[in-house]
Structures are given as structure tokens and as C-alpha cells.
Image (cartoon, rainbow, N blue to C red):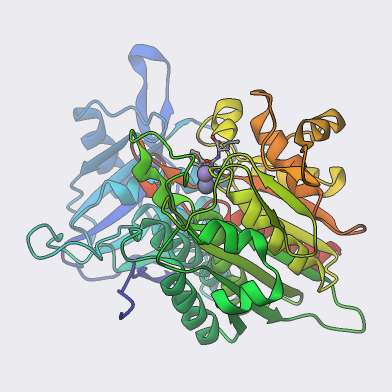
Length: 508
Ligand code: BES
Ligand code: MN
Ligand code: ZN
């Protein structure tokens, strides 16, 4: 099967001025704020050296005529005859301030990009406020997934093709900043594309092939374990979960050797790659079962992150271990009550075949720890309980307390908003089995997200700082688009993991 195109991100340029001549069907995106109170409130263009008083005046008059007030994420399109673009898109930042957070700019850029369907060329002065956030938000917001649309429903335009960010100078580090934003947003798009590819087309062997092609193209070392090797080497969790499907499991390892010096830091990444989760014999209800196309969101983000680490030549060793399986009910499927042996020897009574993520992850975590990493970040669409506890946009972060808090804080910083959660000691007792070392579910209906984390903790080697990020809902947006987040795959927590890798490079 040939790999479909996926999202083709726009190119990014930096410039110190708008072009002299008119650029056909182009749009200039400018930030506006709310000036004045209530009745008097009106949209005011954020001052920029790239807009003269005449242009600003014309834009503000037009916005006033349309009743635009510069409210947060409000977009208004106006014509500005004195400017060399076809129209201007004003995007609101809300009340005037001295400065804005990167996330505010990223979201404003995302909203602007989403409102510009049919436009291929944009200029922006949002970059005046935060170049990196503006470029990232534009690329993330312009994302679309058209691989499975025939001429019957394919969009007529090619999507956003070119972004020109206006900046005081085009030399470094300006250029590097724009390139970095482009690289990060493109990696998020890789993760989104994987999540958005339907389970008919993305099954374990195909997922492994695509990860391998992508990894090798980025200079990673790639190893793929097929079902025979997995069985021979004792990956009982991956084999057990995968055995109900006619499409056998895989385990992919992608290595970026970037570490410098005598003892470079080593980071293990692990991501859940269930290409579809029916629940297995403990089958899920039909309502919304199709959302389980997102059950490889952790794997997608981990693959995107290690590829990004290689592309950005991060000075750290990163080894991704990605178990891939399809959880299906059939006469060859594992049964509730079966006992399997996880990689490394711990035995597990599978009381519920729908708690399959932790089974494939436990094998992968033990394997990842054999490499002797300093840190291990594992992420997965692991529990419905994540959504009950934290809602659809807030990943739960568990693990070694210090590293957990560091990951959560960094996640807040990049706008993915991970939140630290505890792993209370007493939950371990709920995972006792009458026949095996552990049961894969607890008898209690409480704290499901924390119970899953508690299960995983049993498999992390001593001395490894680890973080578990449950992105059950945050990886997949099943309601309307918002900010720079489209419907479907979101790419979360790719930006968190990349930022953690950068932080480790800087601070150890
Ligand atoms: N993949 C699901 C978790 C999930 C649910 C992800 C909703 C995204 C949206 C996972 O494999 C699962 O089924 N978990 C069970 C665990 C339970 C059986 C202990 C759950 O959360 O119900
Ligand atoms: Mn499940
Ligand atoms: Zn699952």
C-alpha cells in the first residue's frame, strides 16, 4: 500500500515589510484589541511598524462599520485598498495588555487560519507579538486531512500554502525561530495524520511500515518486531491483545542518537498503538466506538516526537518503543480470565480485555527500561476515567513526583495543559489477583485513571524517572474545532514531549 500524502504544511518566510506590489488573493492577518468600555468599545489595531497610519485608520473604520470589537478570537475580514493584499483579517485578542502569552497568540493565529479556507497566501503582523507562536498557530490551524476524499468531496483549493511573517529583521535568530515553529507544527501534523487515518487503512503492520519509512527518512535507526519475534521473545501483553485480530501485532523501536559527551542523557519514549479498540471479548457498546480509531494517539505522538528530535538534531539520545495491536473479539481472542506473562516475567490475569492498553504498554516499558534510560515518558489514550476526572482538553500526568511535576509544568507552558495527578499507594491492593501476580483491572469503580497508572508503575525499572501522560480525550477532538485544534486528531502530547526533551538537553 502506498503511503498517502497527509497534510502538506505551508512554507514559511520572514520579511521586514509588506510587498510593494499587490499579491493576488492574499490576506493580511492583524491582531486587534478592544479599546474603550461597553457602548464605546471598538476594535483597535495593535501597533506595528509594518502598518502605516493610513492603513490602520482604514482597517479600524471598516471594523467599526461592521461592529467588530476585538473580542478574544473574534475574526473579521475587511478590505483595505491602500495595502498590497486582497483583504485583511482582524483577529481579536480581547482587552489591551502590555504583552500576551504565547498560547493566546497561538490560538488567535489558529482561529485566523481556520477562518481562511480557500486562501493560499497570508501575511501576518501577529509575529510582531510572538513570531514562534504565530507561525505555529497558523500551521496548526490550517491543518486539514483530505487523504480519503475523492473528487466528489475534495476541497477545491490547496489549503494554506505560504505564510509570510513580518519581523524586524530576517537574520538569525529570527529565521531559526520561524523554522523551529514550522518543524514543531509539522511534527504535530504527522501525529494528527496517523490518528486521522482510519483503522481500515492503519493496522499494526501498516502502522509499523509507515513509522519505519518516516523514521529512516529522518535518520533514525529503526527496528520492527513482527508477531513471531514478539511471541519468541516473550511479549505476552502485545501478543495477547493482538491475537484476536487477523492483522497481527508489531513493536517498533526508533532510535535517535543525538547525545554528546561521555555520559549523554538518554530518554525512553513509549506510546500506546492500538490501531482500533473494540474492547475485545469485553466488547464496547456501539455508541461512539468509532472514536477508538484514536487509540493509537500515544504512539502517533511518540513517533512524531522522536522524528522531530532527529530533524532538530537534539543533543540527547531518544529511543521510542511503540507496541502496535488491534483489539478484536474473535475465536482466537484472549478471554476474560486468561493469564498472560508480560515481557520480563510478571504474570497478569486479564479480567477485562478492554483494559488492553496497559498490557501492551507494560511489555514496552520493560523493554524500554532495558536500555537504561535516565527518563521514561509514556503516553496513551488509556482510560475513559481521564475524561471523567479532567475533561476533554487536560491530559493527566502521573509518575515519579519530581519528573511528573516538571512534565506537567512544561505541558502547561506549551498550551497542551497536562495536569499532575497522584498515584495513591492504596490503589495497588485493588490490582491483586487470585491466580497471577496482578490483575489488569481493579474491582473498584473509582480513580480509573490512577489505577491504570498504578498498574504501569509496576513495570518501570528502579531509578528511572518516569511520567505517564493519559491523553484519552485530549488526543482526539470529537466536538467542534477551537483555537488551533481541528476536529479529529490533535497531536497532543507531541509538543509537551518535545519541550521536555529540549528541557532535558538544557538542564539535564
Ligand atoms: N482506549 C480505551 C480508553 C479510552 C476511552 C480512550 C475513551 C479514549 C476515549 C481503553 O483501552 C479502555 O477501554 N479503557 C477502559 C479501562 C477499564 C476497562 C478499566 C475504560 O476506560 O473504560
Ligand atoms: Mn480498551
Ligand atoms: Zn484502548
